[in-house]
Length: 70
Image 1: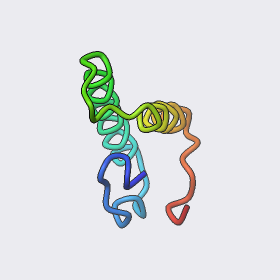
Image 2 (image 1 turned 45 degrees about the vertical axis):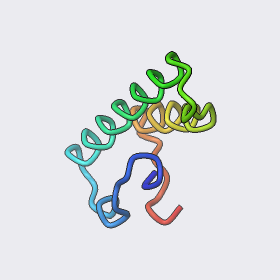
Image 3 (image 1 turned 135 degrees about the vertical axis):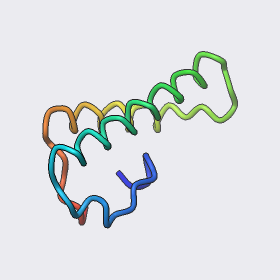
Image 4 (image 1 turned 180 degrees about the vertical axis):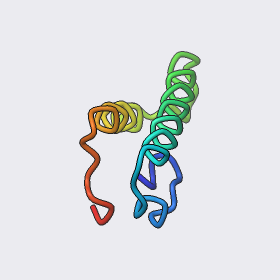
């Protein structure tokens, strides 16, 4: 997760609704940006990153976030 959206691992140590909202917001923003790059045919578009962002967003929305150490 920290590599996908630039969260400091120490931020993941706290837990609660505020953290979940912050993570979902950052994931959604990153996913929108990746989709824009894909539609534009930009050379930095990465299908694997796009898939990882989508899976992470779905997991976070479903409450299936892995432990901070993984």
